[in-house]
Structure formats: structure tokens, C-alpha cells
Image 1 (tube, rainbow, N blue to C red):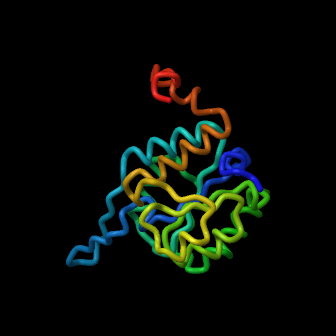
Image 2 (cartoon, one colour):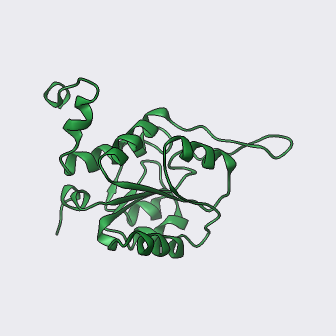
Image 3 (cartoon, helix red, strand yellow):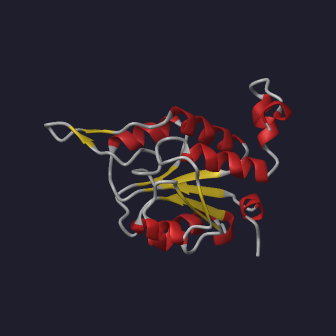
Length: 180
């Protein structure tokens, strides 16, 4: 059986859910129906660093939100699939478009709607505060909660497994030996 690092070394596409993964799951709605979400800046930097290594990032979320569109554009994420209640079909379409084998895909989720995709991918990950049944379908669970560093943790795991973490640290004049 492959270790988590061995699975992470194969990843070419990392897919995130949004609510409960890139946010803490809270939905803030204004009186006119406007929606607000809080994203964790460190997660964004991790996603940007991972993309610079050649790993593609995708988003599959059941909700439609202009806030998500704006945030993902700011991070340079091209594959943003919103309003996808059938995440498995969206996942299959995205992997076909990118011509990737399922073993080359990681997915980070937090709730039951994510399980069908998690059962297909090479590396299924649940955030620390995920639903208990979702956790049972994960190969690995983050220490950080959704919207509080879980995405960054996964990005770092993949970069370390693929040997690209040191190069990312050097961009900030940090030597890996100092922090590891």
C-alpha cells in the first residue's frame, strides 16, 4: 500500500471544495442577499506556490458565488466549477479535459457531498473539522480546520512529496534546514 507521501508525489491536480474547506463554512448573507466569505490568506499563498510548481488547482463547489469567482481569479485559478451539486460528474469532466488519471488527482473536502469524488481520487483528504463520515473516506486528514490553514497544509504536503518545497522556500530566502 502506498504511503501518503507516495500518493502525493503523483498529484498533478488538486481540487478543493469551498465552503468548509477554503472557508470555515460560515455563510454571511446581507439583507439584500449579498454573500460574504472569509478566505485565509496563508491558504492562498500555498495555492499560489503549488501552482508555480506545475500542479494545477481546481475548484468544485455546489454553490454559485461571485465572491468565489473573484478570489479564484486573484489566485490565477482557471478551473472553477460552481453550482455543481453532482461533483462526481464535474470531477470526471475536469479530469477528462486535463487528460489525467484519477490517481494523479487529490481532493480536499469536508462533507458528504464530497465523498463520491473522494472515493475516486488518488489522494482523498478531509479537513480537521470535517463530517465524521467524510473523514472515514479520506486517506489523510489535515491538522488545520477548513478556512484556517487546511489548504496550505495540503499544498505543502504535495510540494514536500514532489521535492519542490525547498525551491519555494528559497523564493523567500528561507532555507529548509532552518524550519524542518
